[in-house]
Figure: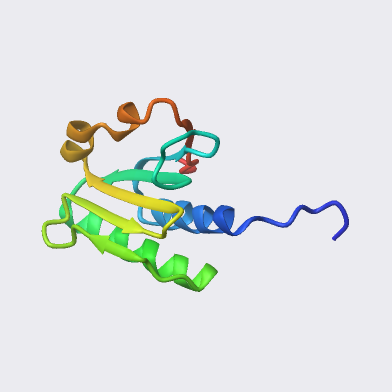
Amino acid sequence: MPGKKKREPREILIGAVGTAMTDKIARDPVILDFTGLNGTVCDAFVICHGSSRTQVEAIAGHVIEEVKKKTGLNPYHQEGFENAEWILIDYFDVIIHIFQEERRKFYNIEQLWADARITTIDTHE
């Protein structure tokens, strides 16, 4: 279509993650965009939390499924499934953090990376 901008692979990945999070009713999903900042480990973090271990596991599993379906990518690394207090899913340029609420408050990643551009993911609530 004329005038329609092609989405970058990173945008497609983040879109798939956001959709998966909202599908499983993730709480307060945000994107921390690090592009243009020096000394960062990746281009973006996508962060949310769930209200229970079961919900955190469901969000993480759905994120992995949706990203694979929409981009063909598998995570480079994943950890935290043992206790599901903080699950990390690494796609090189985009790192996903899915917390239980108390852990998210404790680690407060958004404050640690306060110089990042923060975008709230619309959950249609």
